[in-house]
Length: 157
Image (tube, rainbow, N blue to C red; front, side):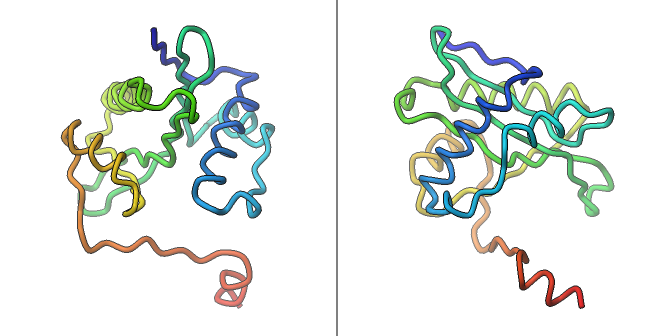
């Protein structure tokens, strides 16, 4: 049985498990600086801008979804950016990602968000199939851009 619940105080270590899994599968595990205490601090502060859901299969931790608030100027409203959906390897193909995404949708609706958006790696055909099955629009031609580390510092000068 799959159970999905909102993160609770003390769940930072579980979120680190899925964060490490994601980092490893994307080849940036060595660049990770996140700590369990970061999740605890940011999820349970007075005015959190992030939220997390945890999935369990027969009581065993299986995956997570982490989102944060965003704003769409074109819509003139706040919306939800789904940062990560991660299922631990041993729990894949059991419906965990779908259960997490259904709860993400319920959370968005409960918060009054009219849109949820996220980044999908082009090579992830399994994710694409799931997202399409659930009714997601997948935009072609968009590129994910970032400034970080020294490039960010250089531009800020």
